[in-house]
Image 1 (cartoon, helix red, strand yellow):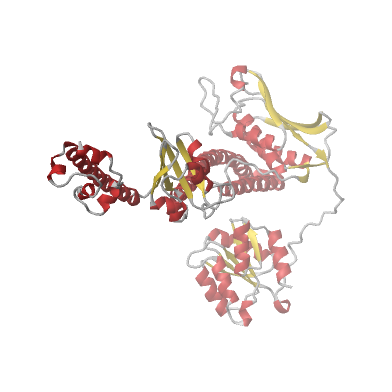
Image 2: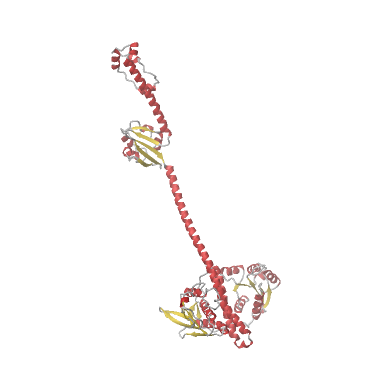
Length: 593
């Protein structure tokens, strides 16, 4: 009992953690012997209560040592992870944190301590700014439900805070610097947007390329159709020229020679106009028609058309008449070349499909919605066209032939092209036909009367010769690689009073210019060895007595760029082939002054 009393009366306190920190390995029982009335020596060692106390104290000591090692290990773990950590127990007291958390919020180590109430902890992050420089999610940490939150600090750092509630109460909060991640996400999003824009642009470009390809294919098809049509239309004036030349070759037709020459010239000019269309269509999208209005004597246009077709009609045993309405104005504003192109096509078809009988061309003015229109109709006594076939006539590549009769020549494009031309002029086309009776094809285009100042005819006096330097006969050099062109041009110049020397290419022309004195030089653009433009450039680089010779060019390429290039090469004037005597006289007369 003495040992029990000694234990019950012991008043000396000790700290298990302290004992562990001092490195003790067992409880020093001497402290018991020093107590008043305590047993000594072997009495204490044999006392069961003391023995039990010693055993318990050793167990507590080992537990304290293990706890210290565990706390140290946990501290090492907390300080070696790259996230900040704060642990709050069920009593709302701060029990753990790490260095990463302190660095993230730039906090002093002494600002927080174990056992600190969460309200005091939250006060460090109040609205006034606190350690973080601004209000933080930490200011309401204990009230936050489990989840993810973001703190944006004054220094630009963004911290992701994850709150997890513990089953026993309290919470664990982790803190991650996601600034770089967010910036990376922003850059990725920006790149995604840029990529989206690029994809959109590429899609738009792809669509544009598809459309361009479609247009190119359509343009190519249009050009093919146009060239097929134009080859058909060229035969129209060519037929008139050939027929006229055949009539001129008849010795009995001398009395009509002047009128026949006029027909041949008119048809040749129309053919030249069609050839110009081929050049233009090669530069364009192929199926567009430029309408160029001018003031023309409409009766002269119609009479020239009838005169051009009458010889061919008469060869086939057909008569061709022209009827002009009384109200038809003398001068109108229209595109006479396009108009004749369409009428030529209609008359060509009428001649082709009429075996016996007659043809007629009629013209008059009609009013449609108070607008004056020119109505031209071509009527034949041919085989006629049934109603079922009429609607196909104005479609591309549509041809109609009757049983037992050879299929019509051509591509079936003529009427389709005519319809496009007339519509481009703001008009319309149609037909009226009965089988075995005949057909009437008509067109209506806007036609406004025009007035022109009265002019006295002033034919060019080609009989008066041109004069060169010092009043002498002008010497002209003609350079062209085509012999027939040199021959015709020489004859025209000789009629103008010129002495003509010819060259077959550009190099020969330069040699002749070096050895002779010419008053003018006419150069074809396309020649072997040296082109006309190159010859002009070399002439302008010659000595002073040669470099100022008037140089004229002749070209079939009448585009603005081609003509400008020749003028820049040194040519004083550029003719569009074929050259006429009137043009030669006018330009040579101007340059030889």
